[in-house]
Amino acid sequence: MNRGSRAADRPWLPVLAWAGVVLVASVIDPPGSGGGGTAGLLAFDKVFHALGYATLAVLVARAVRPRVLRSGLLVVTGVALFGFGVEVVQWPLPFRTFSLADAAVNGLGAMVGVAVWAGYTWGQKRASR
Image 1 (cartoon, rainbow, N blue to C red):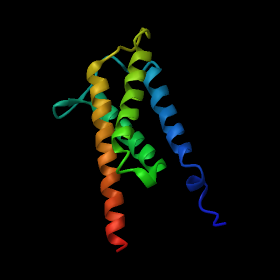
Image 2: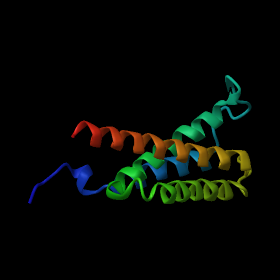
Image 3: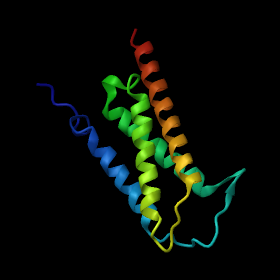
Image 4: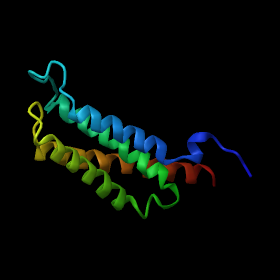
């Protein structure tokens, strides 16, 4: 039996860890939450949402590696639903707000993450030929 790296033996561990980071970051009272800066036309929080959920989507796609191209839509849907669920969790919190815009950016980040992973795996397959 080939003993690969521990991460390869437990592909869902990074997914769970990052999802936990995203959830905790989403429900704590953010320091200096009085106002956000901007990055071009997007508020920084939207950039963080997109990057966080793109990373989560890459990790999920990596965990389902053999079927990434066929299950890309399921990965995007699952990650976007997780993001929507996080927004719902924020609803009753006095220092957080439910935001459809954030939920949409979460879904967009998930799409970007799956596209990045699909491009990476396509490049890997092409290079191995």
